[in-house]
Structures are given as structure tokens and as C-alpha cells.
Image (cartoon, rainbow, N blue to C red):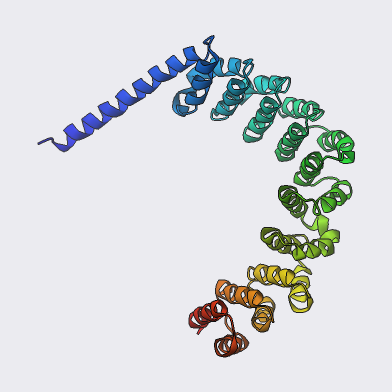
Length: 353
């Protein structure tokens, strides 16, 4: 029978053996990354990402692979490089060079990689991305803009002015992907709301769900700088997209904290659009204030079964209680025609009694 120390020794030997095996594998993949066979290089670029603890040894080969004539190899090499930490300054020239690739996917990969890394030479990174923003491909422009939005530009001289100069031509584009990316970039940096907000508000009527959601998120990032568009955002609560309705309510509270709750209560009590009332009651559940709770309790008498259902869930979320809420829940148990609402009302009443 093995002693404890024998067991531990075997475990350590096993781990050491595995580490050595991984190193041997990485060395083999480094050689494969330089193969004349495209399939071999693709497989090597893909597998290297599985050995993150030993990637440092493969740094020269991975940097070289970012210039590979094969699109898949170059993209995967760029993605794998983001796993390395502490080598940003070595990676920066390779990533900026990747913006000259003829493949849009490689240029997009470079932009996304730069968004995950932090560079000491912020000026070089910023200047390179500004140049890349002049790309002709809409998705590349949007990806570069997202990365620029996330950069810490406090130490870059004249950053806001240079960013705005680069953004202005794109704000005249007819392509929603470009408009959303560039206006969103300005929102991330909380600059030029007078230029970006009209663009973002127009994008809220896009047929694309993704474009609408990104535009709404960008408006929210402006915070109180976007207060003037709060009434327009309230109208978004009439849209059929459930996530969009709920996000609209949260955005109103974010950009107009002083009046947002009152505006949502008014929607809940007076709007003729059922979808808007649903969105309002779900959003008010996060407020956990007495005023919001009273409005939710009143919504238990709404003529829409969906609104009554969400009102029950909202009460459960707040954890608050009142005589009005209990009375309205009992009324539902006696008279409601919806079995789902009745069941939810009973669960809610049991919770708050």
C-alpha cells in the first residue's frame, strides 16, 4: 500500500511529465507553423491556443504567422497572441501590420485583439487604429471603432479632437454598421454627444435587432449627457422586441435618474400599448422604491393578463409588501381568468405574507 508521500511524489512526477510533454508538443507545433502545407499550418495555429502556459516559446513563429498568406492561419495566430501577457509591445507592430492584410477577417481579428490588450505605447496604438479607421470595409471600420472606444486615451495628446476628426466622415455614411460602430465609439469615450446621439436615435428604428441593441447601449453609455433623448427612448418600449423594451426602460433610468422612474410609472398607468406597460412594470421591479412598488401593486389590476403576470413577478423580485398588493393578489385569486396569473399570484402572496 502506497504511503501519502509516495502518492504525492508520483503526482508531482506526473505533472512534471505532462509539462514536459506539453513543451515538446509546442516545439513540434512551432515547426508545423512554418510548414509549406497550408493544412499543417492551419492545424498548428489552431492547436497552439490549447497550450497557453507555453506560448511564450512560440512567440516568434506566431508573430510571423500573422503575415501568413493563408487567411485562416493569420486569423488564428492573431487570436492566439491575445493569450500572451507581458509582451504587448512586441505584439503591437505585428497587430498594426495586420491592418494591411488583403483579408477583411484578418483586419477584424487585429482590431479585436487590440481591444483585449493594454499597451504602454498608447500613442502608437491610437495612431495606428485611427489610420485603420479609414478602411473601406464596413465591418472592419465598426471593429476598429469599437476598439478605439475602449482605449484609455487620457495620456494621449489631443486624443478627443483627433478621434472626432476621424469620426466625422463616417457619421455621414448610409451603412448602419459604420454608423453604429463610430457613434458607439464616441459614446464609449463620452465625447461629442451632439453628433452621436442623433445618429444613435435614428438607428433605434433599424430593422436589425443587433443594430438597435447596440445603439441603445451606446445611448446608455452617455449617461446624463443623453438626458434630452429620454422621451424618445420611452417610445422604444412599444417595440415588439422584449429585450429592447426592457433595455429601453433601464436606459431611461440611467440617462435621467431624476425623472426616469416617474416617466416609467406614467407609462405603466397611462399607456394604451400593452407591450409598453409590460416593459415598464418589469423595469420598475429593479427600483425597489415605495413609489415604484405602489405602481406595481396597482398594475395587478391591469386589464392585460401579461401585465398582471409581470406585476406578480416584479413584487417577488422587490420582496416588498403592502396592503394594496395583498388585496389585489387576493382579487386575482378570486376573479382572474388566467390560470397562469392565478398560480403566480398565489406564489407571490405566499411569499409576501
